[in-house]
Amino acid sequence: MCGRYKLATPAEILRDVFGFVERPNLPARYNIAPTQDAPVVRQRRQPRGERTVRNLRWGLIPSWAKDAKIATSLINARAESLASRPAFARAFRQRRCAVLADGFYDWPAEGTDRQPYLVTRRDDAPFAFAGLWDRWIERRDGGETPIDTFTIVTTAANDLLRRLHPRMPVILVGAALDIWLDPESDPARLTPVLGGAPSADLQYVAVGKQVNSARIDEPALVTPVGPEVAAVDGGLSGPTGG
Image (cartoon, rainbow, N blue to C red; front, side, top):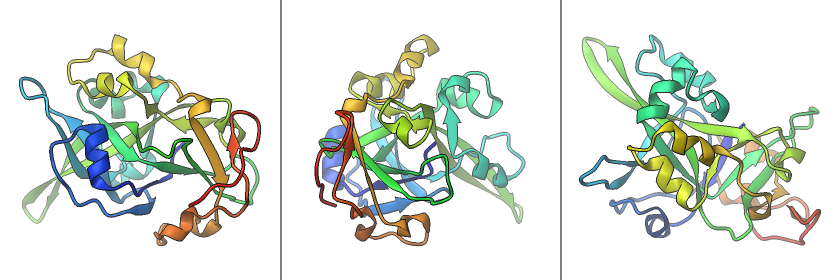
């Protein structure tokens, strides 16, 4: 699964990589948590086909939901059931997005120690999770307020990350990003992009347990607590910086 992530890459670099049209102010975030707003890229339909970035709330509220509380159980969406689960099927067809990140946290599925690990690309480049979004209308005091929310798609973990957890977020690499964001893509094109990112692209390192608290968001969260980085070559590729 994916329950916390970070995005500290400057906005101008993100704009160059992901091609959105705005020049937003995106402050560094080191502990993005469910129910918080976070930057998401969406693509308009042709003829313009522009990519735009906007802060959406993490935790999907389907348009048909009667209560916003459903969002807490829909922070992730399993790739295997996107087309069949009612909460995701319409968004999978019509409302796909890319969730901007440059690292995410994971905790081993077994044990009670709750030791967090930070997963990044080995080249430290930013990346995007496959996401779905939807628009829910909050009705209160006679008024209506549209709220756009998102979920992060997960898949079976690759060989490297399986050491931590059986699931991982879908990371869109290369042409997969274009296919996923294209509003005209059909399911036959979408399914192949939902695999796990190659183990060789990623690394992880243990970080302090302060990240376990969603109230803490500071650069110190990404400081390694040990000198070694786990990578696909088996083992340990040496020290890393923050």
